[in-house]
Structures are given as C-alpha cells and as structure tokens.
Image 1 (cartoon, one colour):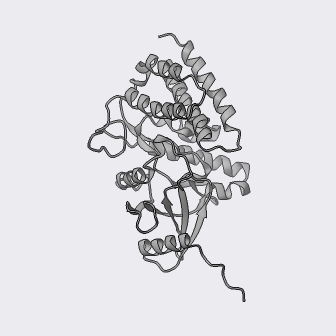
Image 2 (cartoon, rainbow, N blue to C red):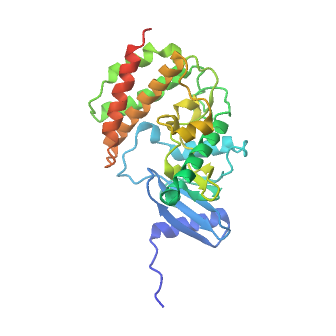
Image 3 (cartoon, rainbow, N blue to C red):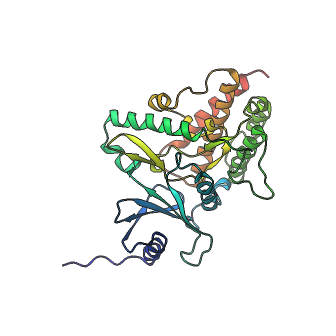
Length: 320
C-alpha cells in the first residue's frame, strides 16, 4: 500500500496551528490559489471549513493599502461580531508574532458551503443568476450597518476617522496614485487629482458612514450554497471600512441579477453619477497599478485604461 507523500514543513506547521486553534486533531490543510495573501483551507471532521491567512512571500509586491491586511481583517471581524445576522464567520485567532509560522496569521470561520470559484464552472446559467441576485441582497444587508466616522472600522489613536467622505476618498485615491508614481507608470496623475477637487461637493453629499467592502466581488471571496443558489458569506473582510457602499467593486460592473437583488442602483441624479464615475476612476486606476506590481495575463490593464479614460472624460464634461 503506497504511503502518503511527505508534507512540507510549512504545511505541517499550519496544520498544527489549525489543530490548536480549532481544538481538533482532524484538520486537513489545502493551499488555495488566486489570493494575494497566502490562504489555506482548514477542513475539520464536522464538515465546516476555516481559512488561515498569512502574509505573502517577500517576492510579492504589495500596494500601500494592501499592507496590514491581517490586522485590518482581525479588527473588522471583531467589530462585525456584534452583527451575527450579517457575518456568521468569526475571528478564531489572530497571532501578531512570527514565531510559529514565520508570519503573522489569522484564522476565521466556520464556513459552510463552497467557495464560488470552485463550483462556478459546474453551475447552470439560472443558478449563476440566482447566486448573483443573492449576492446583491447580501450586500444590501451589509450596507445597512452604519458607523460614526469615515475611515477604518476601528478608530485608532492618531487616526480617529473623518466626518468628510470627500477627504477620506481623496486619501484613498492618493495612496494608489503614489503607488503608480513610484512605479513610473504613465498616467495623468494631476488630472485625476484635479477631478477629485472639482467634484468634492458631490462626495460631501454622503454624510452617513456605512459598512463598505472595497474588494468584495471576486469569485474566490464568495461562499455559496450551490444547491439553493444563495450566498452564505465572504472569506475576506480585510478591505472593510466606513464609507459609501457604492464604492465597492461589486458596483463597478454589476450584473442585472445583482442589481435585482440589491435594489436601486446610484445612477439617478447628477451627484450620484459623478460619484459613480469617481469610483470607476478609482477601481480602474487600481487595476492598472496592480497589473504593474503583479502582472497577470488576463488583459485587465487595457480594459481598465479604457474605463479610466471614459470616467475622466465624463467627469471633465460636467460643469461646476
């Protein structure tokens, strides 16, 4: 009878960390692809799974806003633990030392169901539409959670948050602009800064901070009940902050089914359209810069540059 192949020291250490955190001797470990931070699925004999995350390897170039994601997610899950109706997974452990795994690490869960990316190819068009609609409904519930100030979910000393959404958005955009400038990417940086200043008043119309997940919609992030075509949760809350929920990437190019689930989309008055073009500007800029830092072959950059040009043209055409 053939023996099992030896496990790498990394996987063995992760398994031991999972066994200790979950108080279970029966924990299997699977490295998941498609994530910037290293993600491992920990499966127990009870049928649920958990996610263990560590920092990426030193060869992976991170943007400014991608640093500190483990601490950010730990804070987010602690804040969201007050709303089990919105987020069923909880923070199991956050270890901010490098002694055990050579990196900070975080374990969250439990998750029931399947990661959408794993089952999507086998689902019918009708099932996919049902999941998109369910995602819209889930995002609508998340966006009902209100905070007291724009910015990080947990206000920290030295950064108490802001009462100005325009200032918060400008700070977030500036972070990506500087990443682009550092990498010498050819982009109209001052033109983008001018457009944000020009349309500050439209951003200031947002006065109530709401739970916003900047990066939400990737298939690798969504957990689904494939049998009943519904979303059961999200794997990653590290990009959560108090802001305008319509800045989330799920509103970048929403499907009709998502829109049906969420309800009214922000394309009514002039201020709403201006804000949506500013958010398109942000996400398309982010896609261009990210492609430079971590090249892929999906052709995202050309499409993102077109979207960026369109957004800037539309924002320039609006008289102020």
